[in-house]
Image 1: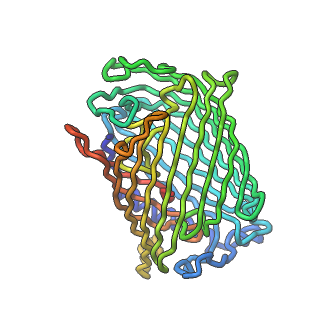
Image 2: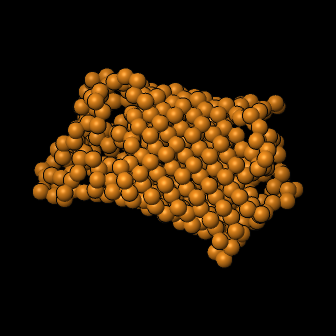
Image 3: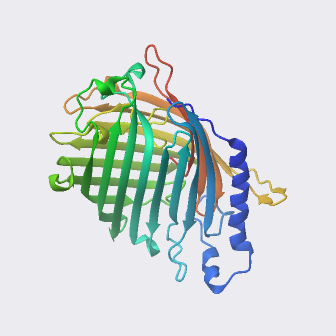
Length: 408
């Protein structure tokens, strides 16, 4: 697991700056166009813990990222999220906020990555669009395939990736959505030190390849809010096929995800989340195999430490909202901070077809804190610390995560 160092002081300063910038949207003189950006919206929660967060408005938040690891050297970057509404001219109070998320970073080892994500809701949430453009020239560790890989076998690989992903769904009835997706990904891999298991394994597309998945999507979504959800269901099924004439190999991919939230009290929320990913075909590129571990689910595991043909995981998270009802007014900083505490636990496994074993499930658990930086849209900064299994002869797997928005 890479050891990441985060700069807390810069994080706090930019939190204050972003909050000041956010407040300027509603406090400055407004034009008729701007008036629509600060329309009061009734809280969807009957408990009313967000009654003090009545304004819907645009917000921009930059989050600094500073890290160090042996394979990357010093990493410097930023995560920037812009939140807005698409129906300012004729606003609908049910319309969810849309977001643009840009994450560029570079390292002292001449590596670079840029990730642009879009999540767009039209008026009344009739249409939902998602997009992801990604380029990275970044190192990764490859540990092998299966649920019993060893840290000592890892290989350091160079990876250049181009990725374009587009999704679109339309509400067809009530809370049901249907749509289509396309994913293009091109990868190149190499190992410069000739160490580890990568150099001895026989792998499909060992030096990389390309794939284009064409998919169909079905969604059920009756959440009260997409950010810091307090109640409701979200279920998604995507089935995609990669034809041979636009991919290195013909492949079939199935992705199923689900989440359920229960409001236990005016300040307490219990959430459940599950995921199933499966990749099928006669030849399966190693870099497309489902991977366990990231900052969203199975926190505490290096992404790709365990990978195989199928991936199954589930987690639960308890969140407790805190409003200290204090005002912080120092120079340009004028905020009434609100937080949430979280505790989570989960389990997951990877497995090949016809080789599912309950013994393969691995634990993951941890705790974190959230800060509401865009209160009207319930957007948060999330800091989580998670631990996983301890394999014989290895240190316990763990991770520290600093992210924008909730894990699920």
